[in-house]
Figure 1 (cartoon, rainbow, N blue to C red):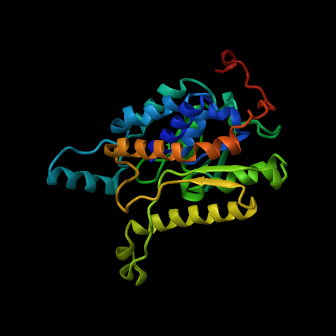
Figure 2: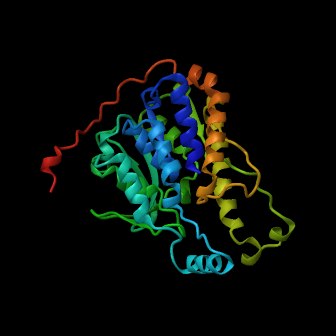
Figure 3: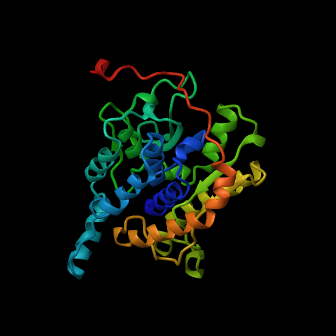
Length: 311
């Protein structure tokens, strides 16, 4: 539900007249949030990112316009194959980020994914430390697709230059702690100086029914995935609040169960409206806490070689 997040950011930029990336030292995002984070880091206006969801959502997440038989076939095919085409998502992202590299980011970025070859967590990082010598050379589209390769919806993303990645949400569905640890342990900032803004993609109350409490695969179904994802988010938010002594602002809408799904492009107008409302509610607090002065200019420790030298 990146439409909600992108709409909120676009409305904040419209209301304040400020480019948000200029006011943060570090941006992190997972899955659809990772796509948004990469685009923001490259200096792309939030309004342009929002248009990606509004104008291309139906291409990225097509839905069968058929009656029962067609819908049944769509569901059956999803059992054996990915639900959507990754090539379409790649084309849409390329239209926004063009041929820019991850290292062209104007702000420090940390983007979670899962390394399918190694079988462990992956963090794509800009060159904000001398030892970060590889990720900054990657095409920006590679990082965006790597963090957003949601299992069952898309195949794992295999990069042209090597590497195979799965959606970062499998282990960092809410990257609040990723950003906090990067700021304190890697960038060596005292925890007392860290202010954290966390923007969700909407959530809904999760209830473990009596039937599911009895256990079993059939009783849980897709609910098990939602349980794991919701547990990650709540755990990360709670830990981050405790570590920052509540110097953290969490913005997220709680919605009616079943109202939105991860790949339903028919509700983008509703998500846009919710995101814009959230921006109007929180604009004053966000401006006071985060947008009072631009962050120091980010200077990478490594400079990407000229593109003409790449073969």
